[in-house]
Length: 299
Ligand SMILES: [Zn+2]
Image (cartoon, rainbow, N blue to C red; front, side, top):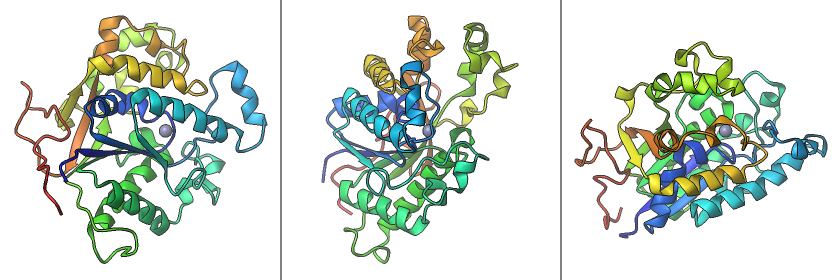
């Protein structure tokens, strides 16, 4: 097996875009096998455009069904050849923000039977045999229950996939070489905070300083930076595809070119398991998620 294979695990449709869009597009363009697993359809996401607000009243599955279409369009824009819904489309329901009643819905991803979800993940891992897996971090990026759960299921799925004693009927064991979590550098927002605050964007306007951001990690925690500004247009196209969720008139689409390339053209990761590669940039960060991975090695 010499093919490079990488698996991205995200909670909702659109989560693949901002933290991992250019990275996905880059590896897809290079011919690597790129698999995206989305854990829920995002049924309770906030609808940001007026002409789609009716979806919130069209039945409890209307937004989820609409977002399946948005996801397909985004996957196409990013060049993802293999997109899957964990356990099949609609198996797990969006759990809503922490502390909301949707957290208690027995159909929610937050309430998922972990053994079943982990088996579904292990089955995918054994089939696509990724050397590299990327997911949200253990804090759920910004505390969202589905992001926390996506990380938990990815971690447990990787462990189970490697263990011949677990789910013996779900494929041949496979050992993932490197596991990353996606990360947003706080420094980027510290440096550009005034710009974001003055942009009129509601989210940033409500913050006193970058320290109030609900997400972000310090630079020294980041191990890896993938810079692929040539894939920026694909990422923006994918973001536009998630029209019910991402405001096209929002600050992210109005950034000056240089800032847009800085904020969106480079993505950041933390290597959690595995050995970092030797090739590093001037600040000692890896520049390739496959760095140091032995290809052609059959487990
Ligand atoms: Zn999400």
